Image 1 (spheres, helix red, strand yellow):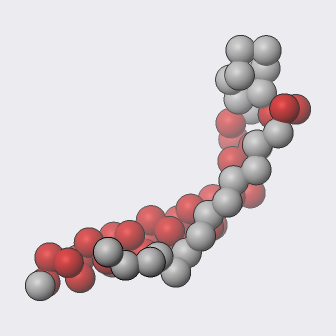
Image 2 (cartoon, helix red, strand yellow):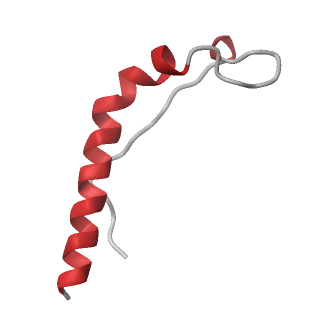
Length: 54
């Protein structure tokens, strides 16, 4: 097992969810984290490719 270089920390507050615990506006809540999530996905795909070579 390897440690990923990317670390994605999402911040969702009470103001972001309704009374049922559902995100009120998923796009505006998660868009600020999109670049970090995309970097994490790229790293995970790269690790998968590396594992398949061994």
